[in-house]
Length: 275
Image 1 (cartoon, rainbow, N blue to C red):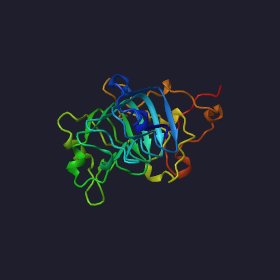
Image 2 (image 1 turned 90 degrees about the vertical axis):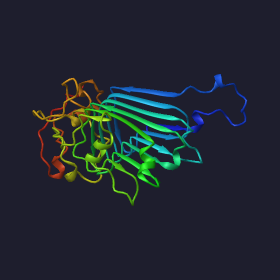
Image 3 (image 1 turned 120 degrees about the vertical axis):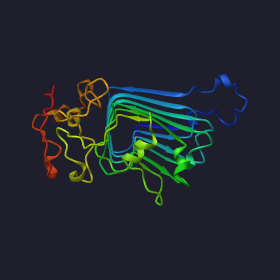
């Protein structure tokens, strides 16, 4: 996990109960821009705490685990009326996990998970649900926890959008979009995306390697139906603003498309020369 936030980071020690409120920690706010996260594991793990806000702009997240995982560990919970915020703008996500996963045991009364996503691309490589709620007695209980504000997002042919448990049918795209009407999910598309270098998830290897990925691996195909953002630019991250990972040898023009080893097809995008 890249960001591991526990309750001990946001609470005063129990032996100091009379500490003035002005000395309590401020809400945790993390701003991320123009980054490439890749590898095995998740991005954010949150156990307990008060108000936490992650704002992510123009970033690629390619990870095998969940992007935001709320946990109930050692009896810690999101405090009453706590707010967890995740704001995504021009973000490209490839994951074998979920965007948000939370057990109801991690949620206290009146807690809220706020998520805003705009001009983003979400691609599930293993068919996991976009949102996973664990331990909800009924879907209505889980639905009351999450507040979603989406605009011009693309879901790459996803079949599961919100899973509530083994006994309840997960929301598909139509159910997801209808639930957030009229203004919660505007201009969304679930058409399969044409990637320049990557095959469809059905033919990718089960142990898809996230660690060697470079920015150009996330290039969209040059076609008229490429996903467009609200301003007419490509949805997802602007790849030319992302850092080139080390070592530079992975930038070789001889690097094959991601689909070649698994029998897929796709146009080839050339990566920058190594410096």
